[in-house]
Each structure stands twice: as structure tokens, then as C-alpha cells.
Image 1 (cartoon, rainbow, N blue to C red):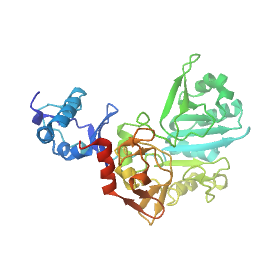
Image 2 (cartoon, rainbow, N blue to C red):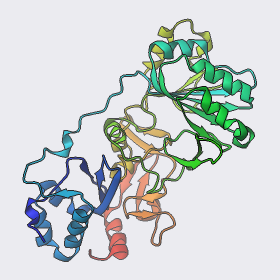
Image 3 (cartoon, helix red, strand yellow):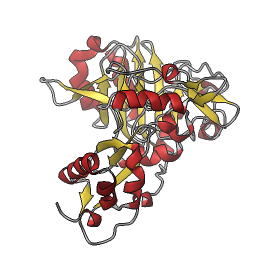
Image 4 (spheres, one colour):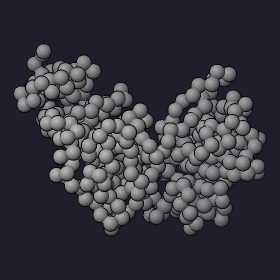
Length: 367
């Protein structure tokens, strides 16, 4: 094999360290490579020959695999650190508006349309329930006036409208997604289902409560955003069917209602309200358990961050992946956080490192 001391990771390949495993995140080619976290210092030093010298058999196969998969380059030129990626910042005050519309006569607020005409956004998601196809079409025609990049149409009774999907797409070429399951849809990652009778896409949503290694969003924007912001809630606003602004769906916030507002400056005041944007800067590095997970910069979930004593954040609902033993729920050897000695709740965050070490030794041996 070639002199590995001359090999280095491509600049778009970023190491994300987890508790048990880490990953090389290939931003541009949207893929990842997992390896033991004990090897992270070797990669950080970019002295890959040292890896072979320390644990020859195991790491030799890893390095060979990285070369085969084209994560490493033997270029003689010195690349800048992958940390040279700059923070992503959208030009819009709000990237995505999620608007619930319920009933036959439901129509998106004229004030919000005016706001989107003048201020813009990346996307608007319209969630329809108990609405006719005519109501959906009327709202889409109204949305055509706005300055948004794309429109998501969510129908909670998908089969009811399936015959009209093609006509919905034709109303506005910005209509990117149509969801056809009978539930609310808030995740960015979706499963595409091609329909044979027209050229549009019908979308079915992945489960929000469970993640999988096939549901991660690997791209530059998600990576950069997740470094300092919550990858789901950042710059996202909800507007329920009664017109109330919410920082997350079903939050029961009743402080601001668009129906009582007179100008777009009123909307701008809401967008700057501290309580309404409290989740925006809660990055996964600040959330307990997530901070120890190698997937934290490509995982998007709409679970609500809970706060404990100011700067401490946690999720009430436990994830189906345990980063402390690198096991998915359902895999042989999987244990819950509590079974590993990890506590993250409204009272405390603690990790029994000795217990986890014993568990990992039993699961993985001395490797």
C-alpha cells in the first residue's frame, strides 16, 4: 500500500465525534463512514501512518476502506482544515412558515401573504384538514403572489384528494411536496413515492419519533445550521387554524394572533420575540445525549427541547439509538439509556462511565 502518511481527508469530509463511535461526514457526496471514537485523535493529527503503527490489523482495514471509498486523498498539496466551513445564515427572518388551515372556507391570512410578498421565505407549508379540493386550490392561487422558493401542501386525508394531485401541481410550479398520510407532517426527511399517472411527486412521511441511518440529512446547510442552531426549529414558525403564532406545533401559545394585527411590522415583532424563538439556538451540541451522538449534525427531529436550570437542555422522549453503546433499538445487545447508567431528565444529567465501559467490552470485546 502507498505511504499513508501522505494521505489526508478531503476538506468536505468532516469528523463528528460521538461517545462510542464517530463518523466521517462527507458533506458534498451525502454519505458517512463510522469508526471507533478512539481513533479520532489519529485523524485529527492527519498522521494516518500512526494509526497503522498503533493498532495495525483493525485500523489497516479501516484506512484501506476509506481509501477505497474515496474519503482520503494522496494529493501532495496541503488542504485547509475542514473547520474552515463558515456558519450558514439564511437571509430571511423566518425560513419556513407552517400554516394550519381547517374547514371549507379556510384561507391563509392576507397579512401573512403581504409579509411574504415583501420579506419572503424559503418555504411555506400549508396543512389542510376538513378542506375541499377547491379550498386547497384557492389558497395555492393566493400563495402564488408570495416570494417563497417552494410550497409544501399537506393533506391529512390524502386518499380523498389523490385524483386531484396532478391538478394541484399544475397550479404552481413551486409546489414541491404533497403528503398523503393521515397525520401531521413536520419533518424535512421524507420518502418519495412516484405516481405513474402524472409527473409530480407524492410524499409519505417517515416517523418523527424514530430515526434510522437511512433518514439522515447529509448536506452543507444542515451541517452548518446544526453547529449553532436547532436543525428543525431554527427560523421556523407555526400558525394554527385559529391564527395563533406558535414556536412549535400544539404549543397552546395564545399571546399573538395574526387576526388582530394590522401591519407586517406586527409580524416582525413576533418574529423577534424571545419566547417565540427560544429553541432556535438550541443546537444538538447543547442537548444532553445528542451532544454525545455521532449523528448530531445530520439528524433532524421535531422533538421539543426541554430546559433545566437555564443552560441545560434534554429531550423527554428517548431516541431509538443509544450513542453510548452504538446500538439501535431492535439490534442484539441494545440497552436503554437507563440500563446503561445514563440519566437525562428534569432533575439531572449523569453518565456512569464505568458501567458503559463494561457494557461496551462485553458487546465489542477489546477492539
